Image: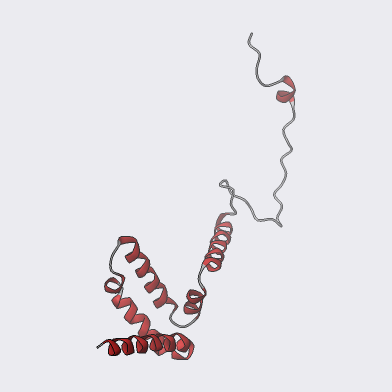
Length: 131
């Protein structure tokens, strides 16, 4: 008779006693997470990680009244870059909507609007000098 790789001591060892779930701890489902609560916690952690990785400008833009417009613009730019499309052409409409929103919320976005205007003025001056 062939010898079994499991020793007789292992087969006779008692199984650990089953315990009642601790009501103070979240239940863990078969997949090892906490069910819906675990998923929400995981999503929140992912959002926090994204915020940590996100640039300060993006956080600022999302902090004002134009968060939705900015997120749409950001997605458009990412999609255009991935597909190799011209960002200006592809995202013209969402860029216009974002600019309009920022103008409507100028009290919050004033620093960005001023910087944008200064850049436009500098480009115009450079074009005028080269003419």
